[in-house]
Every structure is written in structure tokens, then in C-alpha cells.
Amino acid sequence: MNTPSPTPTPSTTHAHIVSSYEAELTTLERSIRDLAAAAARQLEDAIDCLVHQDVDKARAVAARDAELDALDDDVEAACVRILALRQPHADDLRLTITTIKASNELERIGDFAKNIAKRVEAVARFPTLPAVHSLPHLKDLAVGALTSAARAFAERDADLARAVWESDAPLDAAYTALFREIVTYMLEDQASITPSTHLLFAAKNLERVGDHATNIAELAYYLASGTRLEGDRPKADRSPFIGAGADGA
Amino acid sequence: MNTPSPTPTPSTTHAHIVSSYEAELTTLERSIRDLAAAAARQLEDAIDCLVHQDVDKARAVAARDAELDALDDDVEAACVRILALRQPHADDLRLTITTIKASNELERIGDFAKNIAKRVEAVARFPTLPAVHSLPHLKDLAVGALTSAARAFAERDADLARAVWESDAPLDAAYTALFREIVTYMLEDQASITPSTHLLFAAKNLERVGDHATNIAELAYYLASGTRLEGDRPKADRSPFIGAGADGA
Image (cartoon, rainbow over all chains, first blue to last red; front, top):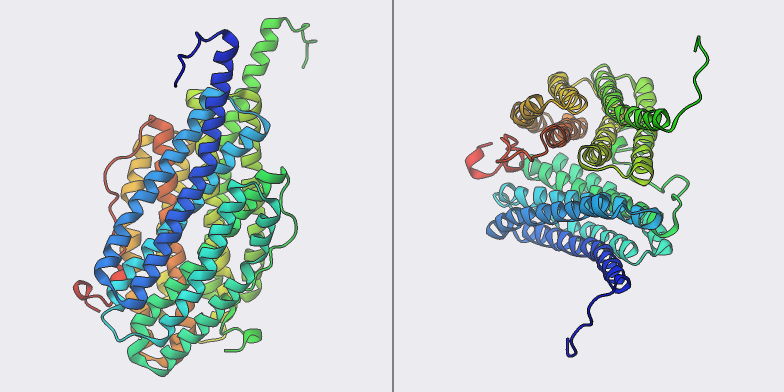
């Protein structure tokens, strides 16, 4: 802004419109990364509260979920505005649609963090269960997947997207192992049953975060490559079958 | 087709294009109702299998989820095609975007039915637990909400949409009561713990169906009225607090 701008000619006006449009599209990519960072922080904080039985902080975490909901609304409104005013095609249309969907996945991940935070009060009335210390590992896997999926989306990195998509199995396996561990404590100690049910749901929430991260990875792959990820995703969540024949227990 | 068609003039060609576009939009509304009917049937069947310990049928129900996924993909592809080729505005743009979102909600409801069906094998290895007979009531509430929400969407009925949105509390309350009932059985009878955990998750899945039906109701209201539902949705799921002070247990 050191020199006065020339009076815009039709062609510079056009360039200005295009570059403002491009700025809008770039904002979409950044907003997915911002939402992912906020969701990751919520998960970190919720699990931290559960491990340290910090009821006050847990309430603050649950309340903060409204910020993620508002961010998701903003992203969607920006996308709808682009659809209405810019009538995007091809790549830009794909970006707009996948951004709406990815934003929605991240908002739901926020809901899982909120649900975990809401359980802290109930869990904190009981002595700390040993199984609670397995949750941070699950959370690390879930946050890792979520962060990588969002990066793959923002950077249009098809290889990273595929890697995230293929890496859900360790989280599922860790969840199944923890489910089994928690049920064992319930069988051994009747007093642990009520808090244990909450840990079961907290663990399930983290496993579901992995599923949503996988969905974001699918969107990222589609965005980057224009094609869908093919084949069956490796799944290792055997927990619905625990108690059934082949799975023992 | 009894008389030969006249050679199209520009104006009849235009009318033809418009009416084909309208047919595409009407198809979107119908597809949401079809998806909702398919999801409702999956829930009916999954709970039926759980109550009657029908493992073979449960496998078929789980396998049938792929059909819902394919339907959702078809709906989304139709919407993206409309966005790309028709560049819809105002009402039509709103219909296209809300249809993508409602379809996605219904696909997720299908996932919950699949998850319930997958638990049948594990539950069927144990004697039938009394709590299983409370699940059909929860399922009826969830299916009722889902069906009404889809009807509100297809018929653009804002009043019905609001009624669905406000009626989630009974399902949440029934879920909280069942959660409490199941935990009581777990406390009384150690042998019931493993199958009870599966019933807890099945009940939770039905409660989540209600949340997704509420989301569809919000989309239906927005589609019908152009404005958002305001205010706090009545919530009665106190289960995350069970074991915490105020809630007793």
C-alpha cells in the first residue's frame, strides 16, 4: 500500500475477483486444519481430565464444544456461499463438497471429546481404575490419525491419506484389548462396575474417533486424486464379538 | 406417445430441461424417504435378531448395510451432479446441500443397526437377559423419530420437524433408565457382565439414532423454513452422569 493503486481496469478487476475466490478456497483448507487442531486439543484435555479426575476442567472442556460447533457452522456457511456465488466446477466443487463433509466429521469428533468429559464427574467418585491408564495410548493413536488425516486433506497428500486409512487397525486392536481388560476388572471387582461402564464408553468414543479420521482420510484421498480409495479397509475391532465363540473371552 | 411429438421449439426444449431438473430435485426428496425406510428396517431387524438370538439373520442384516452405503453414495453423486450441471440457487441449493447431509445421517443410522447386529453372536451365547426386552421400546422411539424426521424432510413440514426435534427427550430418558437397569443386573449377577456390556452398547446405539434423527429434523426445518431451529434442544440423557452425585446410583 506504499504506492497508490491504479484505477482498476476490467482485467485487474477480474484478477482481483479470481484471487479473492482463491483466497476463499485456501481458507477452506486452513479451516479444516484449525478444526482438527481444536478437536485434537479437546480429546487431549478430556482424557487428561479423566485420568486426573479433574471435574472442574472437564466441565470447561464440555462447554468448549460449542466453539467447535460454531466453527463447523462457519465452514459450512462459507462453502454454501461459494456454491451460491462462485458456482465452482471440477476441483473447486470437489473441494467445497469434501470440506463440508470433513468439517462435519471433525464436529462429531468434538462430540466424542465432550461425551468423555461429561463422564469425568461420575468416574471421579470412585477410586482410579487401573484401566484408565490405558486410555492415553488409545487417545494418542486417535489424535495421531485425526491430525494426519487433516494434514492430508489440507495438503492434498494422497499417500498420507492412504496411510491414515490403512492405519486404523492398531487403534481398533488397542480398543478391543482395552474392552477386554475393562470387562475383566468388572468380573473381578463388583465395585468397579459403574465407573468401568463409563471407561468402556470413553474407549469406544476414541475408537469411533479413529473411524471418523478414516472418513476424513477418504475425503482427503478423493480430494487429492479425484478417485475413491478401493478395497476393504483393514478392521481389527473384534469387540462386538467378545463373548462369541471364535473370540474366546 | 400416441401422436408424433412436434419438433421441439426452443421454448419446449427449455420446458423439457426445467422439468427434468425438477424431476431430479423430486428424486432427492424421495431418496431420503427410501433411505430412511431402509435404515428403519435395518434397526427393526437388528433388534429382532438380538431379542430372538437369531445369529444367522443377524449376519444377513450386517451384510445388508452395504446397500445403505451404496444408496448414500448414489444420493451424494446425484447432488454433486446437480451442483456441477445445474448450478442451483436459493431453495434448490438448500435442498441439494441438506440432502447430502441428511443422506449421510441415514447412512450412519445404518451403521448403528449393523453394530447391533454384530453383537448378536456374542449375546446369543448367554441366557437371554431380562433387559433385552426393554430394547424394542427404545427401538420404537428411535424408528419413530427417524421416520417422522425423514417425512418432515420429504414433505418440507417445519411443524413436524420441530415436533421431532423436541421429542428426543423420551428416548434419552428411556435410554438412561435402561442403562441403569443393565448396570443393576451386572451388579447382581457376575455371569451377566459380558452380555450386558453388549446390551449397553446396543442401547447406546439406539440413543444415538435419536440424535441423528434430531439432526435430520434440523435439516428438514431449515429446508422448509429457511431458518434454523433456535434454543436448546430438550435433552434427558443423564447416563454420562450415572454414578455422579446428583444422579444417585
